[in-house]
Length: 323
Image 1 (cartoon, rainbow, N blue to C red):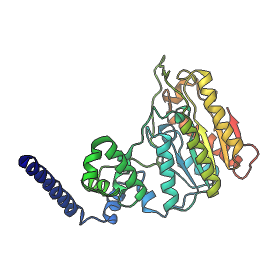
Image 2 (image 1 turned 90 degrees about the vertical axis):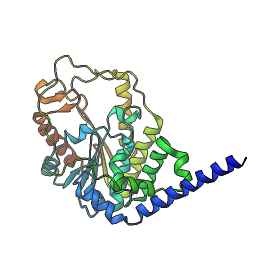
Image 3 (image 1 turned 30 degrees about the horizontal axis):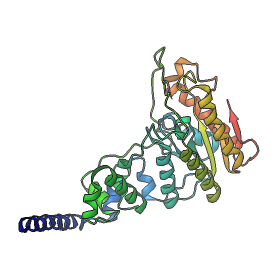
Image 4 (image 1 turned 30 degrees about the vertical axis):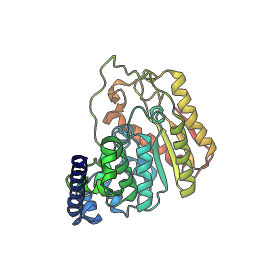
């Protein structure tokens, strides 16, 4: 019995010692240090967290928005200053999270572009990447709580509770040991260029696709957020090389019909569907791979999207476009 008590005491003592050590390590840190680490990366999220952005239009999505919509061309065609926050393999909930962070710190935009791909409705394909937000955890309680939850779920939930960490302590500690870029930016005129075209016979097959009801509710909340904050929401389905090779027509149409229903139900929501646009889908020389236009395709596509947005901005009648 004495041995058990002694071991328990030693165990608790070591835990307390570790707790004190971590506290002392965190003591010199403040929120400005963490934010500056992020700002020095010149990453996608740096301008957002520095605050004061006054863009007329911001875009969110994964690589299909990042590589296929040039902010400079959108500005030329719409007259709206534009910043593209899209990045590779980001799911809808991460895009929505980033938009909320943007609205908290920057001037409300007049318009928001959001990717509306069928896979946006299936959470099985992409996971929320908390790593990207790590340098900004000391500046945003929402980010800190999100990272804390992710870390505790994946690694050491019980251990963290024993150390009595608050929701924002662990991510600040993690950020103190890394200043890796969280992403790259796409301000006007600096969209990354994809060159080449897809090999013939390339086929993508996502047989496990299914529409998730929670994701549908998330898009409804996005449309409600637009109405509440007074900005125009443009949901965009981008072209796809030789469309319908990933999903059967029934699954794809179910997703497109859902996005159309949002545009019909919410006054400030529009839906622009270019998924089967004949100007792109069968033109081999316009593609980098089966899901991304190269430069020769990106430039005309950006101009088309900009013109379609400009034609609908301030006009709430022609809310759905299908190519």
